[in-house]
Image 1 (cartoon, rainbow, N blue to C red):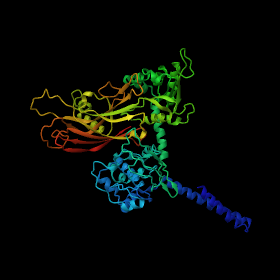
Image 2: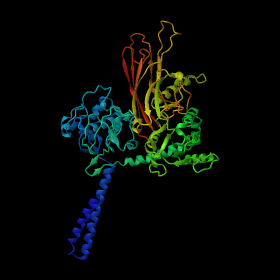
Image 3: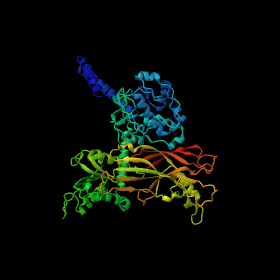
Image 4: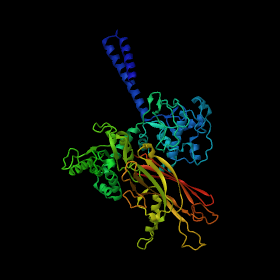
Length: 630
């Protein structure tokens, strides 16, 4: 805008000088007219830029064309580039997240002059444009864009990601259940300021769609913590003729995140929550043992406690002989409480004890806001401890704060407590639902309530304690996390597991009797965190929330099927009927489960796709289910 103002000033001076031979009154009048005109032009240009920022143009997937709506953009893509978005979405029943991935996948391929459909690498963007053709026939079970890395926006501030489903929302009421509010989506997108792009076989190329040149390195498994490849940061931005387009919804999202954080940390100001956590003997004893029974780890060490709450873990560290304990707490109230508790126990720094000086210092604030804290030197912490786990492990998204603290303050080779986390899944039976309770309430049949509760549970996760006797399938590892090396983006993952029915004893059944099927009503998820001998050499500890172990305040997370699935481990000859029914029980359920940070800050979305296999190779797919844990 400064350039425009200089040009206007020069124009203004020339016009005034050319009129100096007129009278003073004429000159004054004309100068006022010119001045008004220039200011009007300036305001018009300013308004135009402001309107453009409020309504950013949508960049074509294949060329530099811009459009006002996604419908116009996709019409252009169909006619000019033979890309039929609507047809592909309908043909393969692509839900929201798969469409989201598809857009990012295409942008990543176009950036390196590759055909999104057949994968052919062209020598230039012009050659690629000539090569583009109608989509090849995919088998429907897997797509090139299934990789979870495409959940991360390829282009920063990609306006199309906010609006690609807007037309469908207007036309199809069923989309309401799957739609994502654009303001909330902005909060999700705003997490990714710089994106790691990995593309097999790519070389240095300038981005046709704007941005900087980059080398794209191969990485076939983005969920693998250790990799020999070095990712390249690509600051890819959408450019227009007037500069970088910025969406005003990001400002709204920032305010939304601020409000959610305020409510989140405010909730932890309740002493009742802290009593529940401290009273959780499994939880608190695990941390106490890891901290106090590994003297070679903690003695004379600098310890950082992220999200200290009452400061119980910091107190353990001080008792174990730490030379300095930095207790970080975002809640104003709890930071004051932790300070008072440390003082009352003669452990607050600068406090005097008959035995020793205090070592605990409480720092109020979110770790992300303490980046420039002068009193905490970068990479000066020996041990980083935090009780960050939420329901289903990842709810509350506190892990991102712990990883931030790790990268900022932990020494190279420093210890993480805990240092591993593992998610498990298994199928549960009818007894784990509320159906049996409602079938007989003081002799009255209220099973209609039970059925409605189960229907609701097919949309929303339930956090409850599941008795191990109600687990009806094998247990499988859903995901492993190495907290020493993982990156925040690995919190978003997709896992595939096969669940098989538990072997049931047939000793009490007549020899020729037909085995009864086992009914699986859903999947239960739990987690374990490990204080392994990598750091806890004297006394490794495992904290488990398994239904086979004593219960914790985390309970388990229950994902209920829309309909129960019959299972049997023994084939009773050739079966007829649909797989998963009593006539044809499934011998195996293949579950594809994805967990991603939701558009609403600190929430997670879980999707579940099921395929049942019969004894004779029959197969049945069930519609995908989406669960939001918030």
